[in-house]
Image (spheres, rainbow, N blue to C red):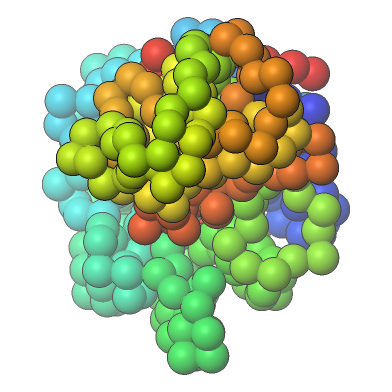
Length: 360
Ligand SMILES: *Cc1c(COP(=O)(O)O)cnc(C)c1O
């Protein structure tokens, strides 16, 4: 279940915490961090987002096909095979070499339209982007010779803004390098560097735009005074209940053996649904508003939970894998801790066979 009102409200909170002169971009790549990019985009725009960001032209095309007209930026670098589709769909692409500018110019000239690009600057992420003034100037020179390509923005990505003191010092260095490499760009160029962590910790780094990803979905990566609410609730069902005596094994590899008579519920979710197998032995689920342990290894399509302490658990009963039930709550961060990853990957892992139900 995806709470679109929460997406809208989270965006409104981020909007109000950001300097009014800065735009806010909603990062909806990877199908809106697993929440559904079309619905999330609409909710984020309703909450005050000015622009959208995706990972690839194909992801942007999905939004255009659903009638979303807001500016869309592809965060990844231009690829020859995709550039024409990007131009056609009025999607802003990211350039970091003269060759990428040439690809955009060729595609745009054919359609006799202008296309917008953002220049990516690598200030210490080590991913994509120009690394110094010389590389930057080569791109700017190519832009001068490209009448169909307009430089609309320039951005960098912070690699350690959610970390401790040392990380913040590194972030400051990245910020200063970015300022240095963008200070002489034309006034209209949108300069942006802040991801969720920087939005909360360093509002002074907003410049002309911030890029809100994980915080939009209610999982700020650092302390924040903003009331951001998780937007995804993930449930399954009990399919079967049995009583086992002491001394019985449960699931593959016999990693769990009952040490007392145990009532076991089988649950309709497994690693094929994106519930990480690596959470075996640690995971818990909520049934009837109570927190109960998952027993033994998580299987492909099913898992078993200990419901000995619960009365009257029946097939069809709801099992909350992530979200609230009664006074209990399981967060993406809990799931991440059990399976040795981060909240981002948990949200994105929820499988395509898990139906997304949207609520306002
Ligand atoms: C994914 C991404 C973001 C969003 O990061 P969050 O930590 O989720 O806010 C921002 N900028 C770029 C370039 C990204 O790739």
